[in-house]
Image (cartoon, rainbow, N blue to C red; front, side, top):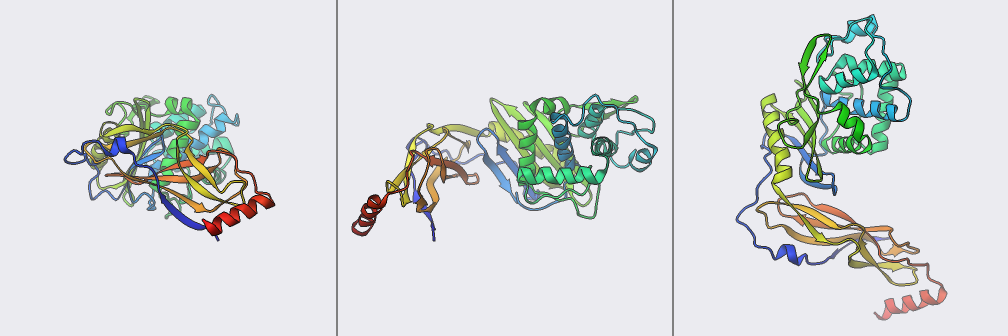
Length: 383
């Protein structure tokens, strides 16, 4: 059976030899905030995590998936943003004014796009249900689509029981890890729709103007959303994002005790992600960092190289990269193709979670013929 092996990699001498300042600049996440996560989408690095896989109730942050589902339907041509949506008496009676609301009235005919703005900007519970009914005919079909989307995105610890995050006896739950996956898909898969429907400061409908509770847009340079949530059970939650200097960050925080704490921490946390770290190029694309044993191959070892330049963020004032190791299940089984992902490089950075980078095969390795197997076997015996 293949054995899991860890091998010392290369010394990042240019980084490790740098002068070590007195102390690192810590992420501004208070001890009483139970869940927090920040991911740099430019390279996939986690800059900070605290209980990132702990399940919690997302409340109105559920509407991030509501928006993703709507974006996907629009992109697939199954609905149109200009499509008028008749508001029924049943929807008004059940949802208008129920919690966060767009205050829809029976007989109105907002467009699908207007309802989408109502869901993303003022967290309209009624608007979210109207989106579901207009596009898929029922809330049940809509939530089934939300869960299918979550499954396809790899959100393994998430389930949706409603279209809007209204309390549903715990049927809706998620994690910071999963919400970061969702936020990444939202901004990367549908950038034009994202910029059109997120980051708006207010919405006026039928003469009523309501403000967006998003604490970072217009406050932190580069911030452009995404969604707040609150229930007495879940506390105050926020999923946010921003782009600055070519870097796109996603942040998740959950369980804040007050809206004031959520807002202050969200702003300082996102700003830290941009300005509290130094981004360094540690190694160029294509650099071979080590090799791995190959079984039944035309050669006994294969080089492991970077598919892309190795870029990492380190906290300002930290000692930087502490170590790097190559990890793979080996020996690898031939045949192998150049570019096949074979291993990971695990980088330990002072003050940050471990950072894993994929390593790929540097060359093709064909399956060995009988003579090559004999030679390789003798090499194994006699070293």
